Amino acid sequence: MNHSRRTRGPRVACFSFLALLLAGLALAGCGKNEPRADITIINGAEPESLDPAIITGQPDGRVAGALFEGLTRLNAKTATPEPALAERWEISPDGKVFTFHLRTNAVWSTGGPITAEDVVYSWRRVVDPLTASDYAGQLFLVKNAEEINTGKIKDLAALGAHVIDSHTLRVELIAPATFFLDLCAFRTLAVVPRAAIEKHGDQWIMMRPLPTSGPYTLDAWRIRDKIRVRKNPLHWDAANVLNEVVDFLPVESPNTALNLYESGSADIIWDKGLVPTELLDVLRRRPDCHNFDYLGTYFYRYNVTHKPFDDPRVRKALALAVDKRRLVERITRAGEKTASHLTPPGTANYTAPEGLGHDVALAKKLLAEAGFPDGKGFPPFQYLYNSSKLHEQIAVELQQMWKETLGLKMELRQTEWKVYLAEQSNKNYHLCRSSWIGDYNDPNTFLDMFMSNNGNNRTGWANPRYDQLIRDANQETDVKRRAALLGEAEALLIRDGLPIVPLYFYVGVTFYDPKKIEGIYSNVLDEHPIYTIRKRR
Image (cartoon, helix red, strand yellow):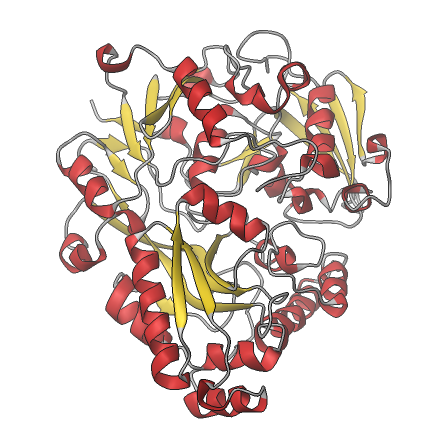
């Protein structure tokens, strides 16, 4: 999932900021007189949406994950799948058919049972091309999902997810997938309320009371103030939800975030980008600073539909001119490791191939071969990034590197979060900053997004050989053979096609006082369910 991350088709699921503002005012609680939340979290950017089919970023996903649940959920300690709305399941001997049995006590927060029909509707909605879900690819392992999403099959009922009875669901896969239960825990596959969506359309997420399937209900969404969620008393696991009220604060300024935390107005800062990097050397030594490795990569994208970035020689030249060590030593400063490949070290059953290194002489040679000796004649271009001090510092450093080594002049274009997302999705950029956090512990979560039909590609790059390698790998049951196919695909991505350039691998940095807060566990997916967190008594 995009770490920090549209105008759409006929069903515009991400409504305008004005509509969101008005709806947020309608959802506002008692304002200044309301009691303080049990837990207050600095969450980053204002969410683009809370619709599980639409969201792409971590700030959105943290809130949506509290409101909506899938057949499975990720364990807070291990980030491995465990039963959620489905209490149990059977897997066929060939690994291609899953039969899920829903809990009889799984109900909507507004009352009424959550049924197999609700699951099927939610999944069909994701793959429906009218929904324009960037994450529709998460369901492509299900029979006919890709064909429906790409318009080859028009009948949504052809999706390989079928109701056996009100509490039993049969899912047919195109190939065995050891990570399918992880996918069932992902936000995109969460169960959403059909009646509410059909009645309210694009505004359904703002109806009140909002029917939710997860451990919380939506109490208030006040733009540029906070999102408040409240414990769902009808949730099947309500007895184990450890807090009543949680506030998510949309704060992007590191100085503001740190001030709120230091003053006691917030209990948790999730992301390293929300603390001033110039203070990290000191802050990392404090007992409330928690470091951990997880599956995340920071990179930049090229829009290969724009000249001269349609030329691989140009893309390679810029990549070879980047001194990544300068970025981690001067800017990020939390122990990050430079990255030449996309898939992080530690990803299950996989070792990524090495990509390009730092070679200024070769960069100059390639740029000259492309028709731009010493940068002469190179057209003006921009680097797109969203509002963040860290992203700005990296953008400035890249700007200086390319000017010093290749004679290129790059403009910086900073936008607020929603504009950044829309411009990236519409490919209205030349280069843009990007990042990816693994949605599950498998290389596929990093590699399948650059398939031609994946909504998260957003580069204009399409390579039939790459697509076929990913498909072949996900049909392969032999672990070593599968890893070899994925490695061949990643080599195409990071050495030859190069629509992206990996810069460094993330190191998790979270701030909370362990004497005051418990229930947060470090794991490789940076996954921290809200319901396990509480203040110490």
